[in-house]
Length: 151
Image 1 (spheres, rainbow, N blue to C red):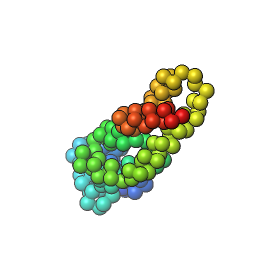
Image 2: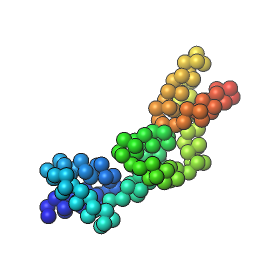
Image 3: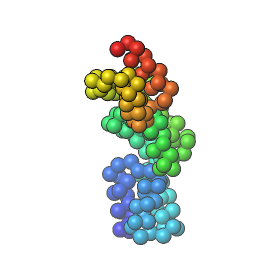
Image 4: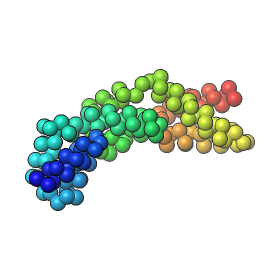
């Protein structure tokens, strides 16, 4: 009973994916059969829902950390989220807002590096920064070329 209450509180605190809950149950000393029973119970009670988790995760990482879709998808796959749920999660990101954030990040980085003399080094630094944030390579390349040309 104590484990049931503990894991319920764990899921109530914030959205969790199945792998996080499974790991927590193993940490609490449960065996495989018990883990599956607890997960089933949490799903039935509505405390555990992977699609809801994926949507909340995508929204949060985009809005708070300004991650791109590539990085968000990669992180969701690491958490063993299904492709269906990942597709649903990507619908949480508004395309206009996505483009605006990408533009803002790129402008901010270009401003930080305004003293860079070499255009090639400048492009490389901005490109690496934006790519590590998880934005699509093709979009970044096109936008960066356009911004450097209009500088």
